[in-house]
Image (cartoon, rainbow, N blue to C red; front, side, top):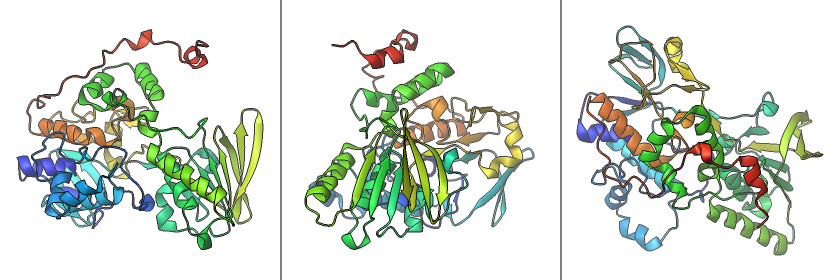
Length: 419
C-alpha cells in the first residue's frame, strides 16, 4: 500500500497492485475495539517520506471531517480500528490497487508471469508483500482446531468461553490484548477461569523510550544490515522489548481490570498469571487440552477447554513463489535481500523480485514494524526508477554507537554488580 501510494503520486502509471481482499482488513481476527497502535500515527503509509502527500493519516482525518475532533479527543494512541479505516480509505482511492484478485503463482521466462484467478500478467519486476504466517510452536502442532488456535483468528472463530477454562499462551502485546478481552467480557459470557502463560519472567512493557527508538531510524537499518550475522542476532536479542513488549496502557488496563475483578465482583472467575513458564507439551484431554508448564525444575499441569496461542508470527515461503524458489537465495528462513530490498537470485540483474516485511534478521526490529514502512517503499521505488536513493535529510542520530564486540557478556551483565 505504501509503495502503491508513492508510485501513484510520483509516476501515476505503469504499476499494478493486487490484493485478494475486496476491502482492506488489517489483522481482522484480533481487531478488538480497544486495540491501539504501538507507534505514532505519523508512521503511516507516506508521512515520513512525504508529509505533503494526499495519502497521509492526517489528510484522511481532514477529508472525513474529523481532524478537529481527533485533536480534541487527546488520545494517547490511535485505535487500530481507525487506522484500519485509514488503510481501507487509501486502498480504495488508489487507482493502481485492484482488490478481490488472488495471485496464485509467479513464473519467469525472460519476464515475470503473474497468474491470478482472472488473468496472466507480464511484469518487468515484482514486489511481494504478503506478511507473515501465524507461528504454531511444535508442542501444539496437530492439536489446532476450534478449541486450540492462534490468536490471529480469535474473532473469526468466536469460541464459546462462557463458564469454561481458558488458557492464553504468550506474553507479548497480542497475549495481553486477548487477556484484556477475556477479563472484560460481561458476566453472562465470562469464563470460569483464565490462565495467562508467558515464557518471560514478568509481563514486560514495550521499550518506547527515545534512545531505543533510534533503532527505528533509516540510518540504523543500514548500519544493522552491514553487521555480521552474529552481531545482528545479538542486537535482536538485546532489544526484543523495543518491538515485542506490551504497551503500558494495555498493562495498566489489565491490572485495573484484575483489581476490579478481585475486589468488586461477587462472582469472579479464577484468574491465574503464570510468567516464567514454558509449555513443555500439550495433549488432548476430552473436549479440551492438558498443558504441562515448566517453571525451572518444577512442572505444573493446566487443563483448559480453550487454548489461545498468542505465539507470534514467522516467515514462510509464499506458495506463489514456488515456481522460482530454486533461483532465489536464502539466509536462514529469510530470502536474502540486497540494499534495495530486492532478492539475490540467478536471474537477469534488470529483472527483480522485491520483498517487504520478510527480513527481520537482515534489517532489524524495524522491518515488520510500521516505523520504516514508508522509507522502505521509497527505497524500492528509487530502485525501480533507476535513481539514487533519495537523500535523507534527518540528523543521523544522537547515540554514538560503540563496537558490539566491546559489549559486556550478557550472562555477566544479567548478574549485575551488586550495587
